[in-house]
Length: 241
Length: 326
Image 1 (tube, rainbow over the protein chains, first blue to last red):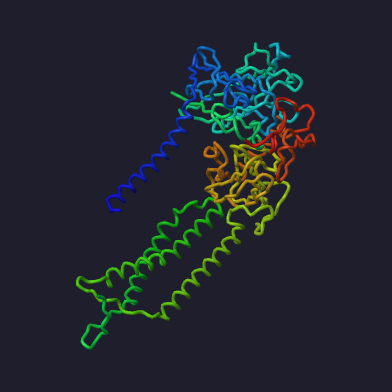
Image 2: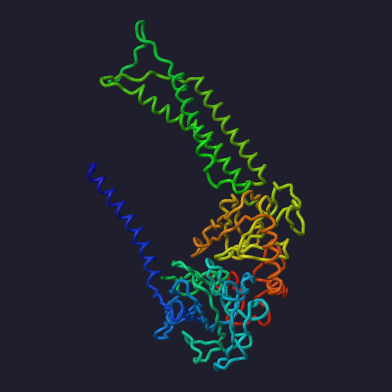
């Protein structure tokens, strides 16, 4: 083989290998960015973020994975995404519908509410008929080891924001969980309604958020599946100008 | 066709003393390089001098550089010298001189490399022993332990070792302080000029606790107490990273620590302890232990999978075979 032919072969092989690497990288980046981002805009210096967590989802690929849904503020539709944006330096009022049952925290330290305004959350339990079970309770701790009380967490570690999200209590969970996803208060599933507020950072940027409970059923120690996948138990909060 | 070299005859210029030449050039270059390393590079070599571990690591890297530079220079110098001095001149088709071995060179090589290896062995061992493991995890039963006294409480100026448990989980670090009621925090605060014993463990997969500026690095394994020592010597912040690939957000698993004056640390730790006591956090935490079995609720003394009442959906801890790994 001539020197020219060998040089051309080497160049082609190099281009193919680099091209494959770029393709794989772009493929994964493209996958991550295919999720829609819900943009929340401020009104009166505040913004209202609405999420729900369900024991399943409406995808065909992994319907039994637990997941978060994010509500579109305009259409009120529940979007299967964990990407949302909020304005900087704004009071963010978060509402989370906890439709999923409980799973204990690995580290019960995160039963403590941290980083919210007042370091508290307000919780109301609802029956599967959408009736409130008692009055709203403002608490700073939801002990996931004391009873069946916590389903997941909403945590933004870079902001030191750690919020345990309650589940329908043990009795209320028995055969009462929503089974059609995304769930709605009127769809017949018991749920816990949690509200809290925090201040978004003054600077723009992307903040990852996650669940700290290993809730990936079917995976070793619950660490896989939805725990490792954007759009389920992992997401980003974009802070925009 | 190659020919054999012709022996030098009377009248041929005497061969210069190549060995002496190379030695002199090497000596000057090596001395210059080591002076630059010692006076210019040494103060800036990471991880800095924030702790005794970091300081020793900085010193170790410098000494290794000081040792390696003359060797590297010798190799490159010989290479360049040979190319310049012994290169084939245009029109010279003769063979090189036949060489059948050189006892002096061989002996010098064996003695030199032996001395270098022995020096590195002795130096490395001393530098592991003196700073008590050099900031690395020594496992649950450390061989080299600091001389400071352990105590159930820690107070400023008390010359007691501060115990800090480092707990890794996907994807965050928390820290427990057994001498402050077992309080836990997401912030790693340390008092200056205090011997610190880190007990590093994990609640799920393998992580690695890397307090960069402190020069501390220890794997965080579930069910294992990996012990590392250091003494912070300067005030300021440092970064804590996970250095073991541990999942989707391994790269984001970092936070910052702070070395404070001893009295400020005491104030902070006592304040957190009091708050966690009043908020019920301490009661919710498991009793302090060197490792934790996350499938067990210590307060109830029962395995999570069998606790009555923990029956949500799924309502129990997912074990290693639940149901199968896909």
